[in-house]
Image 1 (cartoon, rainbow, N blue to C red):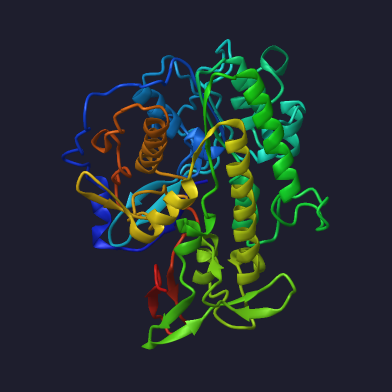
Image 2 (spheres, helix red, strand yellow):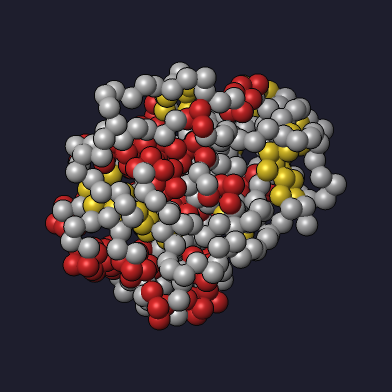
Amino acid sequence: MKKSWNLFWMPFAVLLLVTACSEDAPVGEPNLGTLDPTTYAAIGNSITAGYQSGALFEEGQLYSFPNLLAQAMGSTDFQQPLMPYPGTGELRILRSLVPSPVIISNGVTQNLPVNAMLARPFNNLGLPGAIVFDAIDESPILDRAQQRLNPFYMFIMRDQTAFGKTLVDQAIALQPTVLTFWLGNNDVLGYATSGGTRGTNTGDGGEPPRTVPTERALFQQVIQAAFAKIKSALPNTSVLVANIPDVRSVPFFTTVPRSIPNPTNPSQMLNIYYRNKEDNVGIVGEFDFVLLTAQEQLQKGVGLTPGNPLPSRFVLDNSEAAIVLQAITDYNTILMTEAERNGFVLVDMNAYFQDVAENGYSIAGEEYNAGFITGGMFSLDGIHLSARGNAAVANKFIEALNHSYNANIRYVSFHTIPGITAPETTGVGKRGVPWSLGLQFPDGHMLDVFGVR
């Protein structure tokens, strides 16, 4: 079924469709220093996979940060499980910019990789939906795919008998000379995107299972085991470990406003009401986050009166946001400690994305930020990186490589990276539910509330 989401109109959104005219020139002659990039492998989740705009598809995977990094380093034969268009997931496409942006989807699709017969593990072991435990989980991938309703286990991982049971094992089978490891995002993101209604914990920490982020002790145990195995099997490999950004700064959490101006009296702000997990009705406050998924509910009028509040899953409230922040802090402390213990290079993605959220990202005379659509860093699902967001992340890894291995690898040139694809036509599909922040009141007033804080 075709779906459509009506969004907002901001004239400067078209800037995202223009590529840069020039690039910042590299300083000095390119060189690899002490780095050997012959074989590169990447362990991670959907961000590593190149997932964007709701799906994993070949046109997006070509701009995954590992693929861009492999090209920049000169790594050869970097294989990814390329999914033919429209890929696996629910791909979202910008259909129209005027009179307001419209995003469409033709529904859920599933495709096998075009190189599914590759006789070795893929170099890109980014597994959408993976949590940190997947690094060392030895259970059959078919069981995992069925239990977790996630087909990517079957698509990304190869024969466990031939190549190893875990993500770490299959990376080691490639004998990489460079390895990136970026897992743990989903251990907190799943809780946050559900408005604090589900989690990845086992219950060993005292909370009921699957209600909060993964326990700190379990996260530490998994990271220690994964890093020890990598260090033992690949003592001479250059290993880079990325830490966990504050997921609350991505458009999925920052796009929908916390209050709405009254269309008949713009100086008056209308409250948004929600039901918390204690089943009490509250008002969205300064430190609460209304999720991108709440848009359709708000359009229907849900959340605009205390008698019809938003369900808990549409709001990450202050107490839940504090749980998210504590988990990120705990995970990043573990990643830093264990990376240092094993002599791995830590790439501080948390500080980097915080800086992008606060100050934006500038390159070759162009400005990017963490805004939805207009910011250019994130794709149309509000969570995953755009092609240019992936380029920025690849450049962050290159910066770490240059610093740690006395190298001078050229950054990814943004003028070679596409922006959000321009609309092919205008209007919306005949079927589907609008995804809109334009609220219609009983008196007929329409109000665009996008981005109001």
